[in-house]
Image: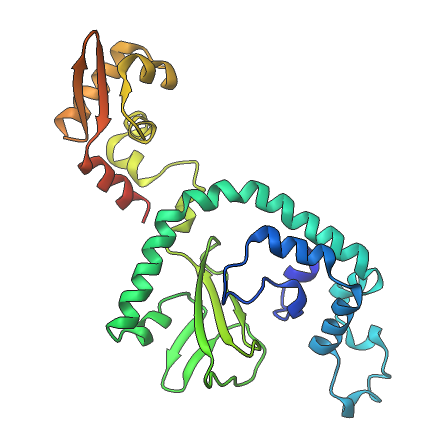
Length: 275
């Protein structure tokens, strides 16, 4: 992975970045594409991305070890092996990240709605300037920090915004696709998906009651909930009493069992704490 994340280098060959997000292409399809990619295509893209213009070839002695950045040389020496390793690494990452991606669905849906509303109501300029700290909207267009110097005209191409699960400073842009310019930016509040120390819900209601509310993704009996959370029934009753008083859960006796469920008020609170 080093060639793609070497500090101080922003350019990556087109063939090893995700497909331009102008259609529905699955992660597995993109991994398969890397597995099947001819090594010569990677070498061609490296040349296109990094080789100096023809007028400068003589000065560079036309040798790849002069114009190819050091962090890409290993990939260029063994392109077939590197592509297989890269595809395998992506498959391993996706195996771990897919559940997180599924958990992020409410965040992603909310961001799609936010972008749609801003576009319809004429707030696209303000929206573009708020996507990430490395994007600045001014009178001349969109200034992207960290991208190689140059001016890129949008022309008739579409501008595609791609919310992604990443740290707050992450940014990926595709400027050369003939159909669209795309900008991948961190979806707001993504960091809360992988926080394990504390969270807003725990700070509001306490860690035990926060876990209780998250566990109640469906109605459960008090017995099942106590066993699932591994706490004594007396302690569970105490916490449930407090959550009933706050109108965050409802209790109902059915025969010999007491069933509890989250209220709509609790659902709204959980959604708010994921923002």
